[in-house]
Figure 1 (cartoon, rainbow, N blue to C red):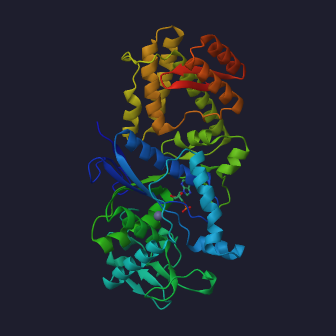
Figure 2 (cartoon, protein in one colour):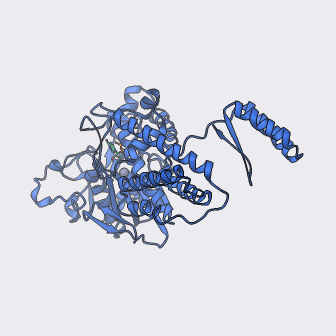
Figure 3 (cartoon, helix red, strand yellow):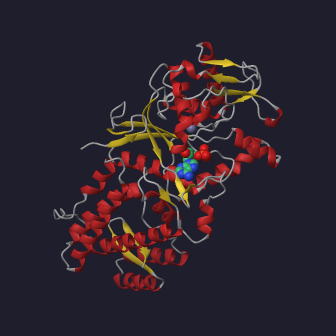
Length: 463
Ligand code: AMP
Ligand code: ZN
């Protein structure tokens, strides 16, 4: 059975086939760096991480792009309020974002383009010029350039809107607008004094790009005119992704994206977590309360991306206890495992996990399969019925599953004192002084560390 994912465009779960066999291009809308990303944003990024890792687990090479929106209405407002240049204002939020990605064990994208990059601005201007030339865009009396939505009959298809049923409400200059006020949207915003120093030259005078053209330019500029998968949170469907389709397809003349995937919002007290509502937590807030990145990752990952997820400390506590069970099982496997694997008995079903993910990233079923495996293999370990060879095979499978889940414990830093004893023990073993080697092993154990001799040398772990 192949992989199937839900496509927002068709509202159906469809078999996934990339344009080029074995290769997937993936564009994911990144953070607007006017503040610290909140845990809701990270629900979207963790879902996209699961998607990328699942595809890699199934043997695809994934080229992922995640943009940073470092110029838009909000970043400009922020830098004006702070009284500093735009780049100075956004830099700390960029740095914090990358730290948070690492804390949550999110695989780095191949490219993190920034909207203010000179090449990207040039491409935005080029695309807007092509749109004007072909009659899809026009410069209005306010000096800004707008996309003429009536020139693209497919506008509204992604969000399943029927334009004929909506009352046109004229032009919209802000990046975010409601379905009720759909109208021609801004591609290039002509400078006004609230923009301060933030402006670039263009054929339409000084100004700055709209948010939507930024993503079209960075996506097609880096990945080419056609992309396999494009993701975001559900709030991106309209108007952002709708606008991206219109702009990109009117420039390239080709279908822009094969598969659109969107995660449901993370909720707090059943409301969307958002900066504007002020009901948000940052990752830092949760780390300060004593939760770990691994626990937050588990809490965000363990609910299917198309199901609502209400964020609570009970959810984090459940993540902590689930990880504790996985860790205990994992340690038992390592303690039992022989060097060489043996086939597993048929009732230890390791295939169900991947099969569940193949079915539209059904993580609940995948984790269900993992815990079933833990239960069954623990029973056999209790009864002395899991052979060391089977434990080795199961440990190998666990490591493969962890290439997707990344639930393994943080590697504990080895204290210098233990490093020193390990070096002395390696020397004693090289000199075949087994008595000294055993004595040093006990000394290391007394410090709370267990040393194992493997074909790759000594391996130490926290006892
Ligand atoms: P922004 O920084 O607002 O441009 O959002 C960055 C990404 O986070 C986008 O893909 C949004 O759709 C997503 N996002 C924002 N709020 C939430 C939320 N509460 N739950 C899930 N995803 C969200
Ligand atoms: Zn975007």
